[in-house]
Image 1 (cartoon, helix red, strand yellow):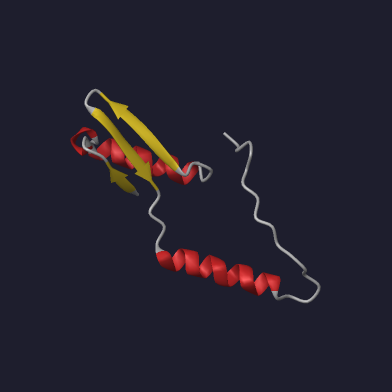
Image 2: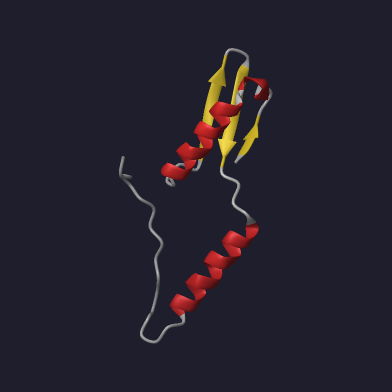
Length: 81
């Protein structure tokens, strides 16, 4: 998780854990904006580059399979709660 902004002191260890878990439970959330009394923070996932490389390699392997013409990745429009 990456948190940026001028008010990082407002982020308690427990809140950091909660935000990380929220992002784990809701993969449809790209980032969160948190407004505080003194400004805001932006919270986003920190995807290790090897995850993206592995995902790209898996997708490429699936697309090369016999009989497969195209794979379309769709975002969830109504995530389960």
